Image (cartoon, rainbow, N blue to C red):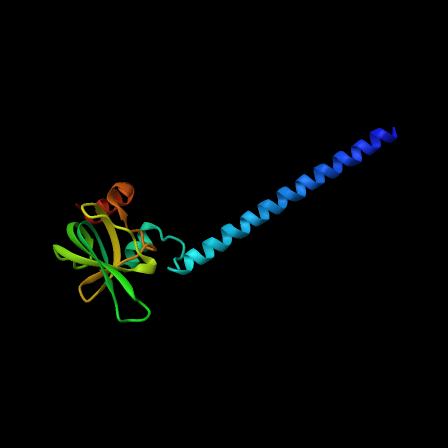
Length: 158
């Protein structure tokens, strides 16, 4: 009986130790995950993603364009030291005054990666004839947004 009681105590202690280790590991993992997401999001300060209708309302320019060239610039402005200008050929236009070829700009800390030759559904603000966008908007590759494009076609036409 004493041996059984001793065995149960040792087994329960090992179980508690394993459980404590598991809980500590989970808490550590959560801490690092949350810390990373806080620091990673500080670069851009994105709010929760807008639904399509709110994003269209908020944007001054909504269009589909194909990337023709990409250039990286260094600015003399201390708060915006690197930015990218992407030359885009407009394919389809839903909102805003968009010329046939337009420049799309985003800063390095909030950049949306674009590839030459790829087509994108672009949401952005207009500033002196340049579209300003970033990864906080619904800007995405055309092949990744078929539902948004269908809705925009129904609202604005082809």
